[in-house]
Amino acid sequence: MAEFDNNMDLAVKTRPSPKSSPTSSATSFFHRSFTIQSARATPKPYVPSPSRFTSSFESMKGKVRVLRNMFEASRAPKVKPQLPPPGKLVSHKSMGADHNRYSYIFSGKWVPLLPGTEDRIVVYFTSLRGVRRTFDDCYTVRRTFRQFRVWVDERDISMDTAYKKELHSVFGEKGVTLPQVFIRGRHVGGADDIHQLLETGELTKLLDGFPRREPGYVCQGCGDARFVTCGFCNGSRKIFDDEEEFSKRCLACNENGLMRCPECCS
Image (cartoon, rainbow, N blue to C red; front, side, top):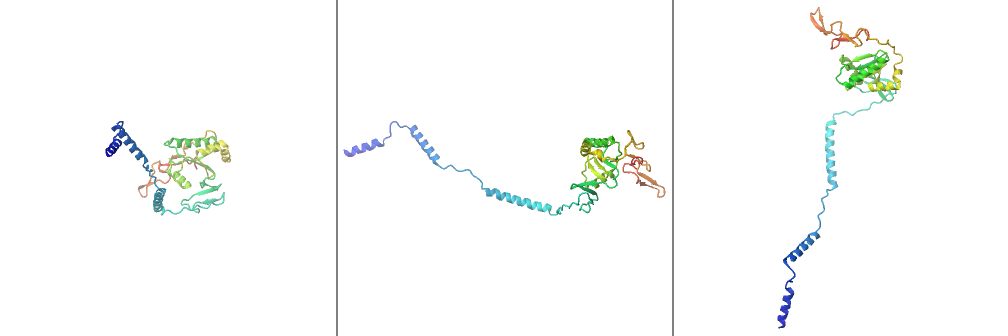
């Protein structure tokens, strides 16, 4: 009898409670699984090692250095020329340059000189209107000197390519802007420089000593164009040789069959 009572007590203890249901048991299972998942360690984000970037960057620098050495191996190292004392006239051939031109050392800067023009004003310009800004600058500089009524040796590079080559030889490069002004053989500058000298009054000092022309003077030979038709070939650029009986190239005119005006440009 006592054994039966003990079995009944064990059955009562192991019997599920009437209040419990399948839903409550499922909810308790969900909470249990969520607790287990939350208890797991969260994985850390991947952070690359700084040494990886350093090694890749160093390898890239090495490749760039190799390519640079391949392309620059044939280049000779540039040697900075030693400037002579200020105010000394020197030849650029003696300074290691590959063009024959002279410069005036002034305040540590190269000032190009135009040999043979120490007694005049020379303006290199163009009469073509291909670039509006360049044409306006050339016209402004020419008009400025005409207001002072001084004679100017105007050299139009669009009318004679020899002037273009001459200008390139003076500066030693081809990318020279127009206009370019030389006073007493020394380079003064372009349109902006002339405008600045005019505003400060320095241009008047530079033009002291030059003879003045009469107001409204215009050359009767060329009309201030500085060029006339060649009198030997009449602009054809060819001369017939009676002795050899064939035509020769006229050496008195340029590629356009023009020559400098003998009245105003002599």
